[in-house]
Image 1 (cartoon, rainbow, N blue to C red):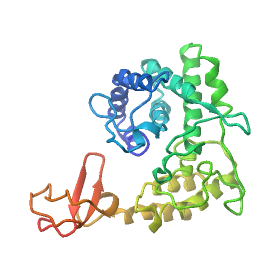
Image 2 (cartoon, rainbow, N blue to C red; image 1 turned 30 degrees about the horizontal axis):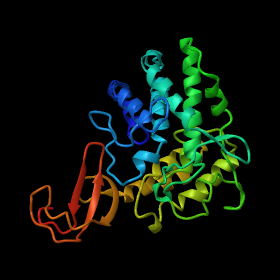
Image 3 (cartoon, rainbow, N blue to C red; image 1 turned 135 degrees about the horizontal axis):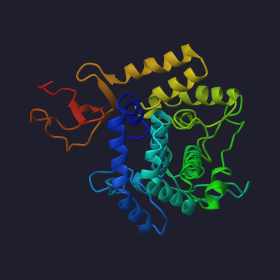
Length: 322
């Protein structure tokens, strides 16, 4: 929600955006309990959250345990809201959330042995097809960005943050390699060797993180990864187009931005509901009845998973009611 939906709401409906931030603040105790269960400090935010704030990810899916970048995505929403509105009140109201989330990042940090910089091990990056990896460049960057934002908030509020926040924030491990492309690129994680990815990952350093890098490196990252996140090998997941498009616009490359923007329309269900499709796939035989009309479905029929900000709907390809 914080990465893909919140920016639009914050820009167009800031009052509603504030209520979404309030939702997170009210569920801080559940995130603290979750961290304590894992013998970590602070607040570890759930990958999927509902009314109680308890993680709703179904076992054995690993996201709830290792896709920890959500604990950076949430503070980034507070940062965006503050940047858009100039509302310093949100900093004081959310300070407990920000402080506890930083304490989680401190307690979860490790040292990268070759450089001595800080990193995070046994994590799942935004590219979920990668599984559990070490040194996810986005996870490291969003942890650093979170700590830097909280240091700025602490200064505004007259707080004295622990020295570990700055130590980790300004000494995070963000490698650049020269063996994947004709020029330097950020490797998605240690051991990444050029395979397809299921969504934007390294590109998220540019938007929404605005991670500082020189122009050539930024261009290389986009050129290298965008062809690996929109092809047939990505299982049809489509969550990269907007990130790539915005990043190209920041470089004043309108033609490259338009090309990525147009891909978004290929990933929409224009025949039924005019909303974004997660993917086209075959589901298991338990999908026996259409939720729209109750009509029977044959096993293994291809279905389109249609996702919007308000619902998830299964549209059977050969359902008589559609």
